[in-house]
Length: 442
Ligand SMILES: Cc1ncc(COP(=O)(O)O)c(C=O)c1O
Image (cartoon, rainbow, N blue to C red; front, side, top):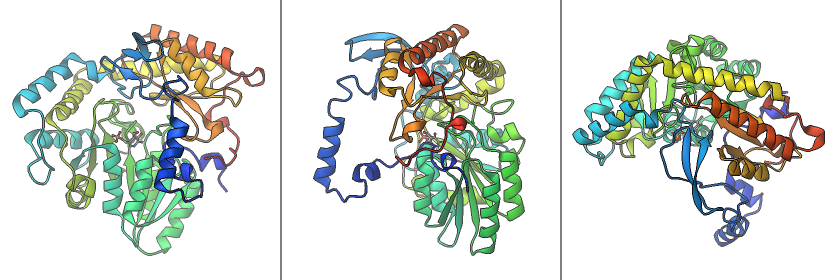
């Protein structure tokens, strides 16, 4: 049986279940219980949610510090703007151009009035980028996952999904009404057993995985997974939100990293990470794309993303093509950061732009987060109940625009936070791989 740690994790939790804890709380009870729990948490400085950024989301941001009642600069290590495109002059110019030509928005869904020549251009460019026949642009990554799974799989079918899947995949499973079974994180032996069993059952089998896992920064072994799907006639649905623009020799994503771009049946990438905006694109075969346009409810029943966003994607693709050094800088920054963290005892790997630092049990993650905040380091803390208590972590997100000095400062602050907040017995940090079986908390 797969270890419990590999069966529980990723970016998914249901606050309603956590709040109810098996009881059937009424509406008023839920609201008042939550208000009581949350009330004052942010104001008292016990939780750093909703920090107000007053500048572009670059390597350095200006933040309104409500605790000190002042605006101050902070180094940003919490943004998925991996390539730093949001402040790239060429990208900004292209946005202005698109708004001048196409206006601010489209005011309707894609199948009616919301499909412009910009939408077509982005679809064509991304099809070539992802090496698939056709691309469908969705309004968000969340919406694309519920749309894809809801549309493609049906009652008779089976979806096998990685235990660390994003919340949107879990919600897509419900929309599909298919039988859904999870396999332990990245466990290809368990996946094969399930594929064998599913092949004997009715209907079709889908396998849903992520290219780069958002909480751990590790990758799915897509070379093995595409081969398994081929052997058992399953359809591979990939969420490459954190791989697009980051993975592969030229940033085309995790399938490029493994040399299997043409073998992934449905390849979703978001615009919300390396492109720094919102929206998503699903690249696949022509028949599947055409089917999705009518059967993916989140596509059909929602307004199209606006021209300014599409301009960012087009300009971002130009930048990736014309300035390959930007993608290389991101890869170098990842390597450099990992090389600085490893001597401190962190078992981290130069895989993706997401680097998790698991906090020891003795560390109060909220206090530690507040110390980072006071030091001018903007970093996301991932706390229980988002993850089980012994998988609480800080998640470093790196950008191509970070300098060596930025990373040196981050690493010095990490060292200081650990020295101040970790107990004497567990100064050595933990990584996802070294965490032992968690107690059933979340
Ligand atoms: C793996 C993964 N899939 C999907 C999403 C949702 O993407 P979006 O923010 O574009 O809705 C996210 C964002 O957190 C993610 O990490």
